[in-house]
Image 1 (tube, rainbow, N blue to C red):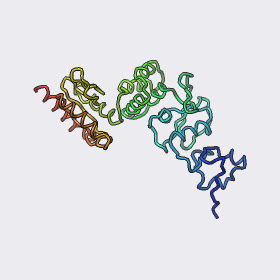
Image 2 (cartoon, helix red, strand yellow):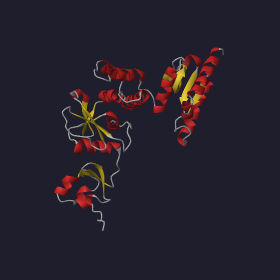
Image 3 (cartoon, rainbow, N blue to C red):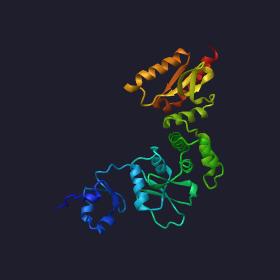
Image 4 (cartoon, helix red, strand yellow):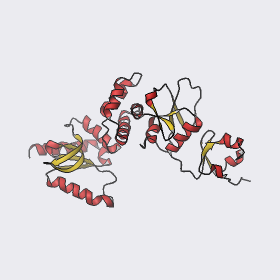
Length: 295
């Protein structure tokens, strides 16, 4: 007959080592395997009432599973409040080069030595610094996904791209050239992953390079900030994200567009469908640029 779930008060809402609570007499092995608890990693459990997220798993792995490890990569991004990993994605940890442990389900280990400046304490655990995290994210494959991750991280954490580029310039090792190329392509300005993908498409298209996050002015009067612009053509490119059309955004968005239109700006809106058919999108932009040249 299945055991009835038991939750001692000391463990409600907690994450813990299973062996420790069994040794302390709080639970039996059978009680630990009931629906009252959820296994996160080998010997690491959480109360089933706890909302499991990637950052909770990363903190649990660093504190309980491998004390002394450093949260890194995409997991470090999550600890820095940038949503770069999903709940069930492997937690990325850095351990010393001499670490002898084997494969751990749910954990991706990287053996390397980190400089003191590369490690900070955040939310009570050791995590790679902002610049070190940016360099680690720049090793992601494929190339465009690395730029997307780096852009999101730099923008959300307000880390200057020049700081990351300076660190990459003196980095050595197998991926150093790749990392420098990724950081050269990143700008830390994009408001969404799709904006980064759009920017990379534009830069490879042979079109004149637009200004990202351009502040459109009419004389001294501020009109709006646009995703991309060719100011001399008064042509803007806007990625149509999910927030457009939301009830609270309709009025300010329409006012913003009206200011741009009244000042002679034209706007091309880009959707995710356009990014799936880039040739058609680039043709529209070329035609718009050509039209303004003869206006």
